[in-house]
View 1: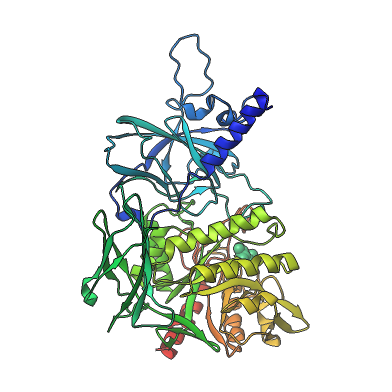
View 2: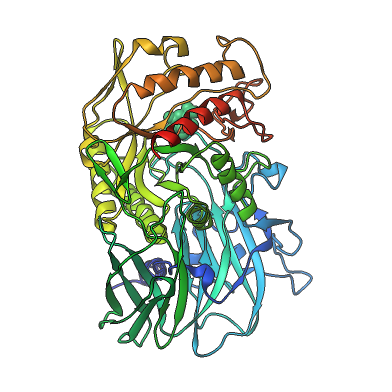
Amino acid sequence: MMNISRAFTFLALFFTVAIAVAQQNTIQNIYTRKHISLNGRWNYIIDPYEMGYYDYRHEPFDQTKSGKGGFYDDRKQVDKSELIEYNFDLSPTMKIPGDWNSQAEKLEFYEGTVWFRQKFNVSPAQDKKYILYFGAVNYEAHVYLNGKKLGTHKGGFTPFQFDVTGKLKAGENFVVVKADNTRKQDEIPTVNTDWWNYGGITRDVLLAELPQTYIADYKIQLAKGSSNRIEGFVKLEGEQKNQDITINIPEAGIKMTVKTDAEGKAVVNIPVKKLSLWSPENPKLYQVEIASATDKISDKIGFRTIETKGQDILLNGKSVFLRGISLHDENPLIPGRLRSEGDMRMMLNWAKELSCNYVRLAHYPHSEEMVKLADEMGLLVWAEVPVYWTISWENAETYKNAEKQLTDLIERDKNRSSVIIWSIGNETPLSEPRFKFMSNLADKARSLDNTRLVAAALEVHRKDFNVIVDDPLGEKLDLVSFNQYGGWYWDLPKNLSKYKFQIKYNKPVVITEVGGDALGGFHADEDTRWSEEFQESLYKHQIPFMNTMSGLRGMTPWILTDFRSPRRQHPYYQDFWNRKGLITETGKKKKAFFVLKDFYDKTAQKYK
Ligand code: GCB
């Protein structure tokens, strides 16, 4: 017979599992739904010892029978003799969305737990569904509504949500989030990266109100390799699964009705005559309206095809050169994650000034808004998951986590015409377990979306003067994409002409990284490391060197702007900044910017 304590353990376990599965896939295009924003100033408590989560025997409060005792209770002292060792009302506030590191001096280098609380008023209607949505929390989030746990989420850059129907009170409610950005070996990313581990609620928090049966998801895209057929699906959630759905694209003269099945899913297959195809030169977005008897949603969607043929990348059937640049989700001017459309526009406008038609959003999913802006501004996108460097390749849980982050990214951005490449990782060191892990991720990406290319940033190795790309993972990918730091991490810029590329695969070559550091405003001769002239000379020598590859079809040098990284220790030249930016942390263009721009202007003419 089960004794009482075992019964409790069992119940606690059951409860935990029930919480974990309470999360659903996030709904498509939440920003166009009726919602209130919970952004704004949230009170926060820094909790390095996790006082608010564990009791003094290190048992999580939220797994005890009462579930009480944690900071998520948001208790107030009622009786003057009462002992309560925290107080949200008296704690400081910070802006959400926003990383914590850039908002309080105490938190600049902090890694651990911070609790956040926000109060909000609602009058929930009986016949509506309510979804609490987070754009991203880095890294592990525990979310509580009115003192009750909704669930947890891992992964610092992908959205998640909870169905809170029936859990909201009329009047004041409060949500508490425990955000923990502790780096761990078995997570994605792992302990080892080259960017700032910005913690906290870094993207929007919304409370959406939906009809009982709502359009939860859809994909409306041109079929693989076809410019005259739209393919996809619409998916309903709720009780009334069998409905007629109309899809209306007025400007394209498309209006058709499909029926959802018992699962609420309808397959979409629409022949189209003449669409104005999306491209960087013509970032045409169509208004797409999807309606059921119970719900209605609209989106702006561009239509284009992307394929490879031999060593060519074909955009709408025409060979294209990807004039790109890499960027992090960080504002160099006010260090911290990009917080608003203005920040994002600034970054993408810089890319445009560089004559780019393409950006690599490294090394993790950037925000949904960023990708929508790329759609609107006409920039092609390489989108990536943080499978970076020394991942725990043999841990099954680690793989599941990577696959989930990749799935969430693809689910979120599958209607964005700007996104042409899913990247499954960056510079992962060769081994058999890594090959298996990465191959599975590549297969997963293809199974979720057959209309885009699948790639990864690989590495080169050198033998004598040969720069070799023969990573077996190359077989599984659509591009030969690799990072090569000739002139910076190996040899000097002026010696690059002695080297030759040796590439095993007959596929388009898209160099994912190349570059070197320069401290903005530091001038010397071209042999002096850290000077703008050194970096300029590196680009001057790299461009002809890369051009020796007949298959070169694009590149995203590292990187648009200087960015912060705890790895970068030199007190004078770096001071916690990676200086490979073509733009300084004050927004000034370095000399190398103009070398690359000149090359891109000429290439644009060639590929016209
Ligand atoms: C790389 C990494 C990138 C680093 C860069 C560097 O290969 O992919 O994340 O920041 O090199 O500056 O060393």
